[in-house]
Amino acid sequence: MKNAILILLICFGAVSCNSTKKVSNSSEPKTTEQDTVRIANDELEYEIIIIDPGYSSWLIGRARPKGYYSQQFLETRNRVLVTEWNNRVLQPQRYNPNLYEMRIDYDPNIDYGYEVNYKLYNYFIYFQLTYKQQLSSFIPRI
Image 1 (cartoon, rainbow, N blue to C red):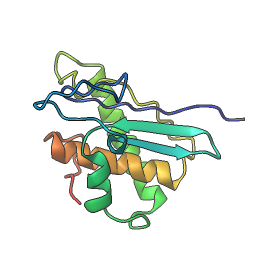
Image 2: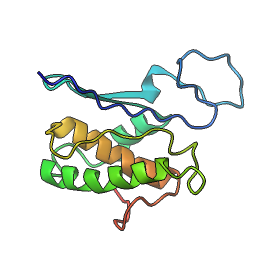
Image 3: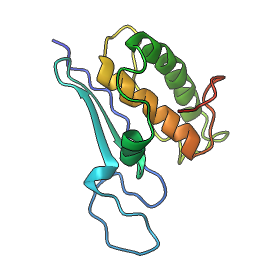
Image 4: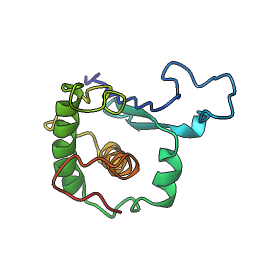
């Protein structure tokens, strides 16, 4: 039985990773249920949780539709992007530790399924465009 869980929590600015409840302050972004994206393959028990204001609406409104990319394409790109992400997590003196907070435990030998790979890849595209980062030689575009 596979019980591994792949978790990615992304928190930027004044958004809290510990809770979605916040004291209202008009200058701070508000975290809501819509800011949390759960990416899961329940059959295999793999999960990614992304907390990043704007990602949910970006995924719905700007990302390529499901089925546009093949699973093999997504897996290949995710391997490259996760490797670079993890390298940046290990170098907080060189890369902003507020952007690269947690390591992503992505094993290329595990089939996470289409949904997990699709949303993870699109998160990387969103992240690169939103925070003006480039994680690979591939130009992030939609």
